[in-house]
Image 1 (cartoon, rainbow, N blue to C red):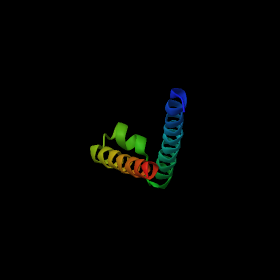
Image 2 (cartoon, one colour; image 1 turned 120 degrees about the horizontal axis):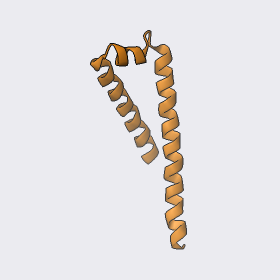
Image 3 (tube, helix red, strand yellow; image 1 turned 60 degrees about the vertical axis):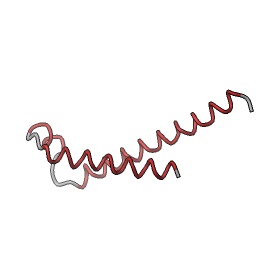
Length: 73
């Protein structure tokens, strides 16, 4: 195997998993926006709800860790 093959294959695999992980994260975000009884944008921008921002950030980090663990194996 030459150098190009050993470099491109992991790069391509990582790119595919990155796109897949971002798509899953986007789907989870869209589902969350649909099921919450209030507007996330209004709560965070207008009302400046810091607690909601912390909870949503924690949720995104948790989902990202799950996706990363499932991709890593």
